[in-house]
Length: 117
Length: 112
Image (cartoon, rainbow over all chains, first blue to last red; front, side, top):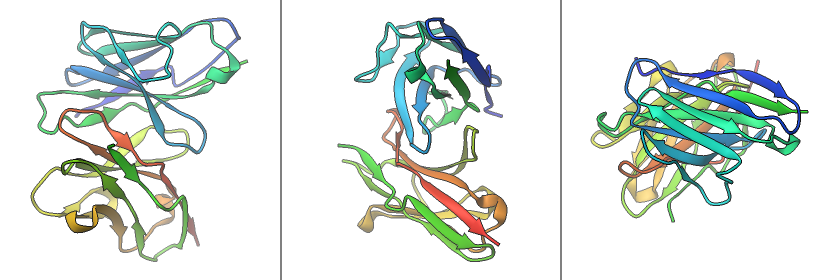
């Protein structure tokens, strides 16, 4: 149980275009979803936290107009990278949490590799 | 400020040797503590977690970790490392329903 999927696993896009990444909780209801960014050989950096039906909370330094997050249902959150540039190339990982689970453990998706050319 | 520190950036061990990866935390209260493993290009897999109770926690793949409040540590151990254990390991902390704080990771190389 507690499986989180991400789609796509890899995406290449041209500079200036937008890319949408989906994060789904397959067998539980995710009251909260998180989006992380990971640069090569570095740790995960939290970008934003989204609660179902409300606006996402962005971490300091993350442009909310560039990284649009939508958490429209208890099983789906999307991250849209708008007007992507090469510096946005990174590994994006989502996680989902069911607050009704003791400890509120996060379950991680497999990640999405974004390359902007 | 809440933080998790992994002092070792890279560790190399021989296959069959024992392993210990260090993790120290700095929190106002005892956090929930986690160890995750990440293979290249993959997401994170939870190895084990500590919430409360028994300070020696058993995880998957033969890993264990011991919570030591006096040392603010939660070190990960494995008695005999396999080549397939080569990966990046992340320690993370969380207080209540708050967000996870990740350490910078330790890369494990296993040599034959």
